[in-house]
Amino acid sequence: MPKLLHFLLDPLSRRMRLALAEYGVEVQLVDEKPWAPSRQLLDLNPTGHVPVMIEDTGLAVVGGEALSEYLEETRSTTIHLIPGQPIERAEVRRLVAWFDVRFYAEVTEPILSEKVINRFTGSRGNTSGPVMARVRQAREYMKGHLEYIALLSEERSWLAGNQISMADLAAAAHLSTIDYLGDVPWADHPVAQVWYSRVKSRPAFRTLLGDVIPGIPPSAHYADLDF
Amino acid sequence: MPKLLHFLLDPLSRRMRLALAEYGVEVQLVDEKPWAPSRQLLDLNPTGHVPVMIEDTGLAVVGGEALSEYLEETRSTTIHLIPGQPIERAEVRRLVAWFDVRFYAEVTEPILSEKVINRFTGSRGNTSGPVMARVRQAREYMKGHLEYIALLSEERSWLAGNQISMADLAAAAHLSTIDYLGDVPWADHPVAQVWYSRVKSRPAFRTLLGDVIPGIPPSAHYADLDF
Image (cartoon, rainbow over all chains, first blue to last red; front, side, top):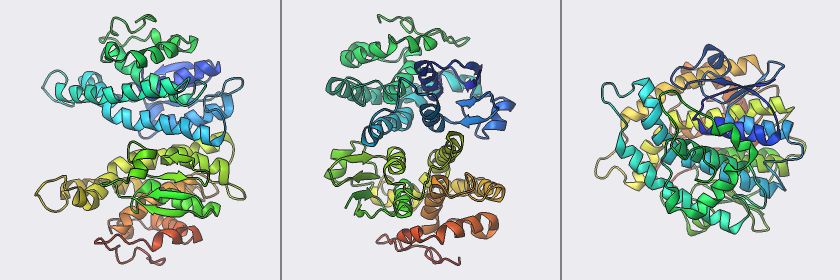
């Protein structure tokens, strides 16, 4: 069985877990921590970043960008997550980059770093607790992204077109990380919430709902399909 | 003829220009400036980022990540820039992400922002000149990347394997931006220099060698094939 080296709250790892489940591929999950990458991970990826998938042959696919395309090339059968004609596939990839680059920099990274990662790296020395100014700024940025999700999901069946795609999984992966930490203001964004509940209700999403980080329990509604 | 909305020193735009030239596709270049995106650009991409390609049909492909795959899907004939089997294509994409994410954050972005973009945005208010500490830190990071390029190019014919690929174009695009500004320490990295001179000697590279930004002339050896 292939192995997936991942970190529970890493949005790229979460997208790969969702994609693998949508494709119907079973993998063995191997936990990694960004603040203490294993020897195995560093040997495969000198950056120490996840996700990395190791095939049964021992060949490894490194990084979410490469793995996303690789899975579509090798594992898609009845379901395509980068579907359609080239121009439609370009729209999927535009939105994936929107979330993995822009949403990540503006929202996921600051909230995840301040609330989780910096607790373990001790990168702030003796100061305790998250730097709330960064978290507040990220919450502000998140509003615009939730409005954009609402706009797209009202125009189309799914974010990139008339079927679910990597774009939905990318957006949902980032939001699920933030939602674990209880920072998504769903009540203020009912249209985005409807879209998220559709993604969250898919069988593939169950793979994420049991996640628990020791010392950092999920928000009360994290695993609730009727949130 | 398709149009490419680009910024002269943007590494993703430069990679697209190189790829288009390798594929033999002519485009009309439309200059954009990151500090003053045009109405046309903002209508096509709310982030205001380049590159964006507009097909003759009027359809637009937004962002380097999407455009890279789109060009390979629609324009590759004799030359493939994401070549080979899925596992080989994954290696190309791993390295593209290495340069577009990591090299960009550590090297290109700080040098480009401090030396060029902040001059025009005035984002530093009345303080004049680049913040040299950021530039120096970026130059330090660059050394490790040049060593990595040397390692790969000694193991393989090209960075990702035995033929030129998007990985070479990505690395060369970033380095050509830095080289325009005269900040690549070629003399200390002769193996990386040999690899770069092979990329720079390709006919496709000529598209970049005539670039001149008003007020910011290129370094003395920028267009010199025997640098």
